[in-house]
Every structure is written in structure tokens, then in C-alpha cells.
Length: 575
Image 1 (cartoon, helix red, strand yellow):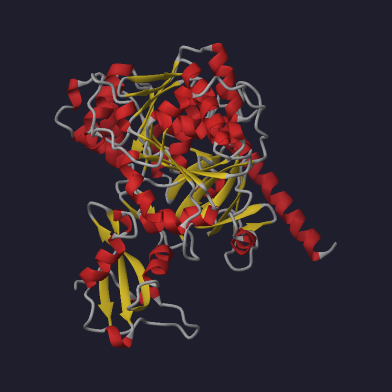
Image 2 (cartoon, rainbow, N blue to C red; image 1 turned 135 degrees about the horizontal axis):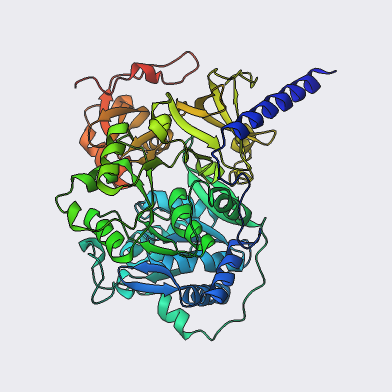
């Protein structure tokens, strides 16, 4: 037997043992295979099926504005036709630069129906960040909120953009909203010359003939994530990834059906928001109550008004609701499932006990996932008795959803680590990214023999449960948003007076972490630029939560191979 054969057999035996443990630990009554209500077909076909079976059922409710399943199917057909009329073809990338709104759903499903590629861009992005994604994908068409058109205009000359489609909150906010509307989305329509106004353009089109179903394995989306090599990378995902992720969680981590009412405010450009807002409710034929952004009173009012039974929020949001002086004014008795994500605040037995006393519902952690895997890869539902999940330290992330597998390996050698040992979490799942867009080297480094090297440190205990110990990558969490130091360092490297930088995190009671950039200037630049000026320069080029505190130092500590020794950069030390 060769060495390779021995290693393969070792992995086979290792996984067989894990599958035995997972079967033994599996909660009774929980499906152990992906659940497909209408079969393994494209997500766009789920929309068509539900539109035929329940045409008048609300698919999306936005502050009282209702988009039925028939509306969403018809409008997304028309959007696909509009894109075709503008020269977009299968495989072309279309950028979507919008916050949560019904138009996001129309654009998403229209792009997928055409067989084009959805490129969601954070609406918090500044011109530098938008230009990067547009140039990385060669997108020639963008759909943007009118409030963001000025950012688009800033990058038109340095990208391949030839068509800009705009839309407005004003098009979909009712004159008499059913729940409170944040002031930030109440503004009047902004006229944007030289662009196409989305909803009037759709209304003017003749009813198009429905396109044939998109292929499950064609590229459907490029979901951007940060990394350790500089700027963000586009994760190549397909419609099969989307429907599998929904099926693997359907009835397992999220129990829903046609009678379910979801509430989501998670940003839909974000992979978790894509799942919880765009994919999961529609897959189940449910109704989504959509908020443009987090708003405590708005969320409480929406749950009460629409009898929401499924929602998700950061632990911070749950605590804010419990502490809110108006909390008891609203009827939350319809809730049956509340999933939380630990960002700044972490779920603990005290928060869970308090929430249960107030609502009768048990808070359950949403669990582990990555943009590369389309997230939602493990589940902890069924392990809340006596706070088993919270007391099983280190951080308990449960069992893999059906179809997913994990193993723990040595970071350097890749050899399997025995159960109970610590190492790198590697994952294999049907929803695994197919590659990083235009980055073959990064793809080869991360995808090894069908497994993703996550860079996360973890362990699988002797019962088969996965535990997350931390990120070996340098990712920071700023109010729940991912911030990657190499991305900030890559931008700082473009400043004309910066020689080098090292970005690390500083602990912060309100934000969780704050990025701090230690900067070494070029010799001639000392005394000619201040930390505040560099910080302002960054603020013009990146989302506000990424903007670092700046500390100018004489010299960065370096290794013999020219790398910054970040362990010597103490952001928590007083200035």
C-alpha cells in the first residue's frame, strides 16, 4: 500500500467514524437529508412554482408595500428582458448596489433567470471599493439606489460601466406605512440624469416570454469576501449552491413552510442576508417581512403587526429589544424561532433565560459558516436543553447540516488531527465555492482535494460536535461586520506618503473591535502628514466601519523575511 493510499484509507476511516458519531448525536425527529419541497431545481424555478400555486400570497412586505409571488415572478421576468435589451447576456456580470428593498429581489431573480451573474456590492462602499469590484468582475451594468448614484458617478470613468439603472425607496414606501419607517429611507426621489429608472422601465415593457430555466451549475453569483492576501475575493457560487443551502437547513436549523412569516433586516448583499432574506423564505413559499435596516421599534412593530414567527438578529439586537422601554407594548407571541449571531455580545445562559422569560422562546445560535461555503453549514438546534450548547466550551457550533462534512487537520502538514485535538477546520459541502473569481493561485491554496482550508482553528470532540476556537486569519469584527486588515493595508499602500503598515484590532466595549493602523511613513514624509489626515484619506475610500485609527511610528517591527511582526503591535496599549 502506497503512502497516498494509506492516507486516503485513514481519511475514509476517520470520516466513517464521524458519520457514526453524527448519526448517534442527531436530534430525534430532525431530517438527516436535504429537504427539497419541489425537487433539486433552480431557485428561479421555485419562484415560478410558488407564483403558480399561490400567486396572490405576499412574497415580500416592505413597510406595508406588498410584492406578491406573482408580482415578483412577473417583475423579475421583465427585469431579465430589460437586461437583454441593454445587451446583457448569459454569463455577464451585473452589479447590484442597493440596501434592502423589494427592488433588490426583482434584480436578484431577474439576473438569475437570464443566466447572468449577480454581483452584490455593499451599499456602504465608497468609490474605491465599488470600483474595485466593478473592475474585478468587468461589470458593465449596475443597478443602484438613487441615493448611491453619486458614488457610481465617481467611478464611471475608471470602470467599464455603460448602463446605470436606478431606483428609489420613494417608489416603494407607502404614503401610510404599516410600521415605523427610519428617517434615512424617507427621502424624496433623487433625479439621476443619464440613467434608466427601474420600475417605470419595467412597466413600459411588453410582457416577455419566460426564459428557459437557468442551469443549476452555471455561475449565478460572485459573493465577495475578504482574505489574507489583500483585496476582497469573489466567491463563485451557483444556483445549486443556493438551493442546496436552503434544503440542508430546511426543517433542520430553520423549520418553515408556506404559512411561515419571516422577518429580516440582515443586509441582502451579505451572504447571511442573501440566505435569510432572498433564499430561505422563497424556497419555503413563505412571506418575508423586510426591513431596510435594523430598527428596534420597527422590528417589534413588524413582529406584532404581521405575526412573524421566524427571525434572526445579532445577540446585540436581542439585548437591545429586551432593554427597550417599549418592549412590552408589542405582542411577540407569534414568534416560534429566533436565531441569533454572536458578534460583539455573545449568547450566554443569562441572555437566553431572560429572553425565554419575556417571550417563551429559546434563543438559538445560528452557528458556523463562511461566504466560501454559502454559510449555514452547521446547526445547533436540538441541543439547547440545560444550555448544553452554551456550556460545551470552547464555542460549540454543533453538527454539520446534511451533506456537509468537516475534518480537523494540522495547519502545516495537512495531516488529520485525532478527535479532541486542535487544528484547522476543513469543510467539504455541495455549496462550496467553485473558485475565487480570477484568482487561480488563491483557489489552489484554499481548495485542496475537494476540501476548503478555512484558516479557522477548531476541534471535533469525541461526540462528533464541532467547536470553533478562533480565526487564524486576521479578520476583525466591528459591530458584527467583517473587517480584514490586509484589505486596509492594501489601500494604505496606495497612499503617496505611506511606506508600510500593519493593521491589528483594538478591543472596544461598543464595537467589539476597532482596526488600528500602525504606519511607517516614507523618510521624506515625516512631519508632513498627520494621523487625522491619513484617516480622512481612508474615510474617502472605504466604508466607515473599516476606517482605522492611525498611529504613526518610526519603524514597523519586521521579520527576517520582510513581514510585519504584528504580535509586537499593541493596539490596546495607551497612546
